[in-house]
Image (tube, rainbow, N blue to C red; front, side, top):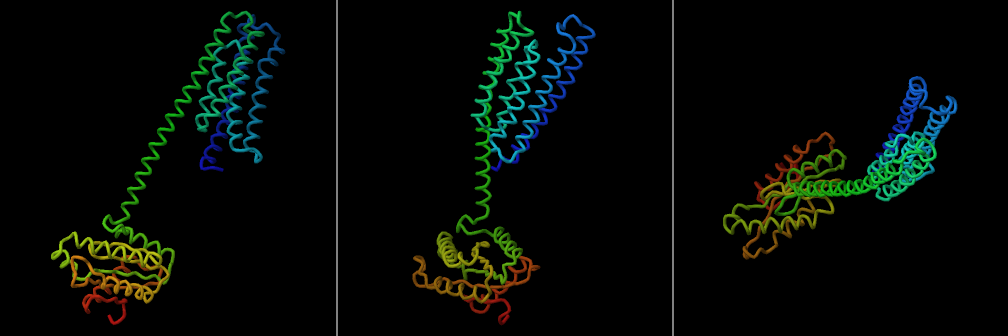
Length: 366
């Protein structure tokens, strides 16, 4: 069943319920009208009471209830395709309209009821169904008119005028339905475009625009998910570039951005396979290592430290830029993300205060 299958199933059941309701109401109206005609205007009915009741009440009502039951059984069957069930639900209402317009052909307006199923097909977003139901309704209107020509409207000179008017309404209904299809399509496209733009904006809000790494907010969301999933041991590394203020003050913020971008690329290249790399803010980065111990994380970070230290920046030919790192680990599901980050941050400041360009695990010599 496709994504609309549940919705279509609900509509099909509603259409069958409506069909039963229309049939029941129609039966009540027929009984009341027959009583009024027989008692108040007996001369209007040319047939005897029994044949009249059989022909204009029992027969059409029996046909309508039979059509409803047939439709109900078919849409509940497991051996019929979803598209066929959609057709059956619409054809059930079409059949009831046809029976009413044929049985009571003296009322020209009832033939117009065969226009309603055309509009109902819009709910299934199926242009082919709309065309097919229009063609079926066209022939049913003609058949209903034929019954009128040999029955209650045999001498009615306006019979075929009513036919052309009804067919004109049917054709108009078809083109209106096609227009509504187009309108619905354009509306859905606007909604889709709006959803895509919103999704893109939400996705952009997850990232730092300079480095294209996850930002601080996303870092805490990812860390919370890792704890909830109990991806233990869970290690968090906090990295801060040493003397970064001097880089900005001496060589400018553009060169400072070059350093940030290079380090972000380095971290992504070496850590993405093992964890999630984020820019926490400023010159500070954070890395989540699910299912990794603090010692495993330290080995990886120290390799990155050596590569970063040995990198020669064009604006700083005779020197090197380094970073300090603090790592914390947890295996407790009740651990709070910010507490774990705070511990790793403390270890990072320990690394800075003891010489910089080193990696310290929280608890080791602190």
